[in-house]
Length: 79
Image 1 (cartoon, rainbow, N blue to C red):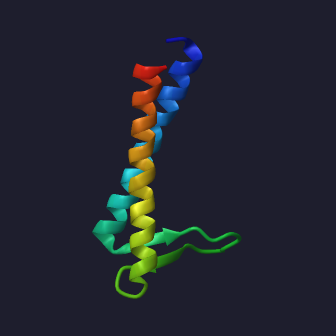
Image 2 (image 1 turned 180 degrees about the vertical axis):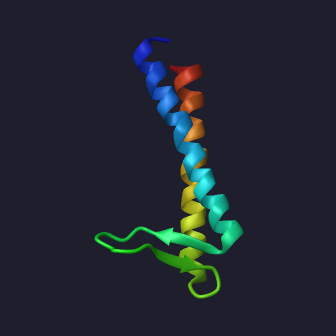
């Protein structure tokens, strides 16, 4: 494994940490920070007020975490 691949793998190892952290924080508190451009203060999707949007954000965060773990496995073992 060359040095460039090593740095890419290290970067992809940080992505699931942040993604799973956001998903866990949303599940625990019941609110997920929605991505809004030019918002002065954070905008949240609450579990009881907007359940579809809340669960979609949680699933997307967890999905990106799983995909990046899969990318690390691919880069380390199959490349």
